[in-house]
Length: 231
Image (cartoon, rainbow, N blue to C red; front, side):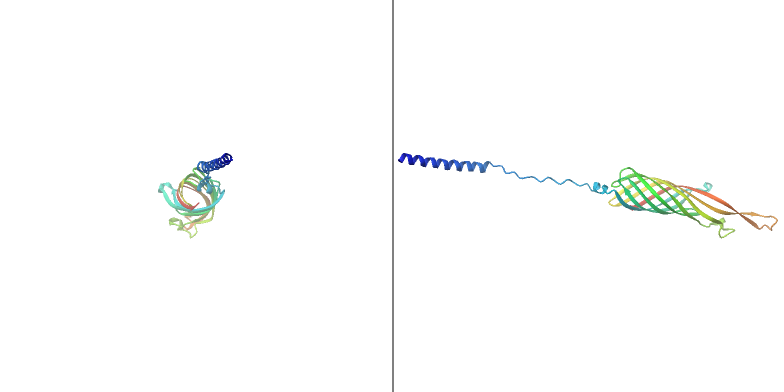
């Protein structure tokens, strides 16, 4: 009887110790997994901006017109200015409308034009080399000067504007939302007017007589331009 009781006690003791040993080993050998959050993908600010298909822009440009109507008198350096407003379509194409002021020594014009440009290298989110074409119509007026005013307070009449053509190539630099560009181009402007031609009559006490001639004048200039704008 004693032997049976001792055997049962030993059996229970061995089972308890075995369970404790297994529980201890399980705690010490367990591997705890903590999920590592995936980093958020970096967002390129330029890609966000370029995702906007249409963006408004405007710029103001000033520069010089270099050329001559009568080159025997030397080159003329005159003033040119314009402002353009429009939209950028995609990453490279811009289109808009503008109004300007051009001086051609004796003549001055106010051109109204449409403009389109394309970025050859780079795009709207980076520095870029671009080509640009402007086409429009200009309202001219005459600046009375010197001999033109000898015989009449209005030597020219029926003044009307004509087409204006202005291709350019330039380089645009980006600084946040500001854009600074420099360009060289060619400007063609046509105007027409009626001019009074005076002749002397030896039998009329040398009093001049006047006739009218219709004249078309084309002005061709090299244009140097600097502009600053927003987007």
